[in-house]
Length: 177
Length: 100
Image (cartoon, rainbow over all chains, first blue to last red; front, side, top):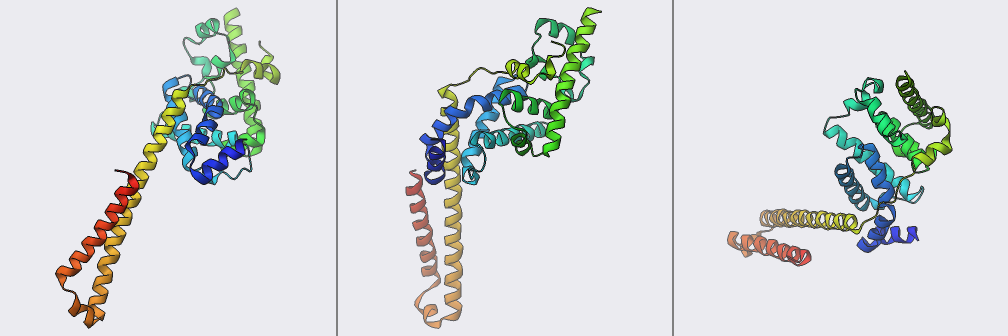
């Protein structure tokens, strides 16, 4: 079904077929970008729109050798990275030590969820966690999307999980103390 | 919660997302696509018109310098008219294609 829609877009620039693909895939792409830009919905949706625009323009380069959603994630991630570079805010918040955050403890008490903790990870750490655990992509697919070696994906996932655990434990200890 | 972060199933459950879907998003992207395609068409036809003009100019110049018969048969004014006709033709074709 998907491959037929993609063929129609590739051969005839069929807008209706592309609209069907968008309805099917907009949710994971928008969720992924919302997590990456840390819940700024307007910016995330704008990036998602640009992602689908680029996907339409370059759809002839998709040869069907991987999942279509992985190809879309790749474009979305590149859009996000280039937008952060443009704004040159490759975030101080991403690089800062999470335990130094002043209102961190209060935030944790208010909302003890993993989604909240994600914002304290670096961009690449956040991306691998979201792609692997939220969208169920394999290590190889993440490697292709983020253009990093397979080994780096595995170590990045492991490191991110340990970091999340460390943040939660640190907060828990502080809270108990 | 402390040791749950190493449990993949628990993490998947925590990071489960709600489905986002609205037609506004699709409509906005489709209108952006149409706008981009329109701009691309305008650019292409401007480029085509310029190419016609340049080729026409060089063709006339070449024929004028190498062919005496052509030189006598066509005056400067006529060559300008010839170039203008080609440019108009390209422009009309562009406008029709662009539905302007």
